[in-house]
Length: 214
Image (cartoon, rainbow, N blue to C red; front, side, top):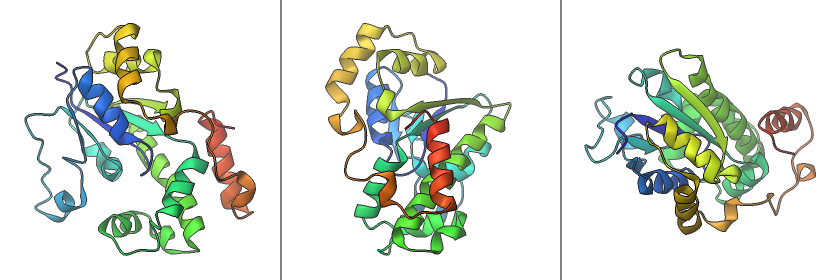
C-alpha cells in the first residue's frame, strides 16, 4: 500500500472521483472529498485525514495545495474545457445557491461577473491555473494528466509517483472495470463557436492547446 500523501485536484466536473476509485483499487487508498470539502474549511481550519486513506480527490483542495506536507504528491487532473464547461453550465453551477458556488466565488471573485456560461469558462481557466501553481513548490511533487488519457501507461506513471509498482496489465484491468465511457473521446454537445467571442474564449483555447487539446 502507498504511504505517500497525495491529492488529486482540478476543476469541478473533471472526473476526479474516477481516478480516486482507480488508485484505490491499485493500492493507494483515496477518498473523494473526504478531507477537502466546504464543511472542513468552515470548521477549525484543521483538515482531518482519515486513517483509512492516504489520498483525497477534491477540487476544493486547489486553494490550499501549498500547505500540504513536504513530499506530498499533487496529481493535477484536467478535462477538455468544452466538456467541463458544458457539464458545469448544464448543472446550473453558477445559477443556483450552493456552498460549492460560494466557495469558488470567495477565491475567484471574477466568477461573480458575467452570465453563467462566462462564469463556467472563468472557473475552468482560473481553477486549473490555481492547481498548476503547485508545480512552483520545490517540496511538492507535481504531475499533470488528462482524464481522457487515463490509460495503463499514464496510470502506471501515477502509481509510481506514489511509490507503487503496478504493471500495465494490472492497471489496464482496473481501468476496464472502473473507467466510465463518458471520459473517452472528444467532447460532444458544445463547440468553440458556442462560447462567447472575446479574450476569455481565446485564453480558454490557448490553455486547452497547452494541455494538448484541440
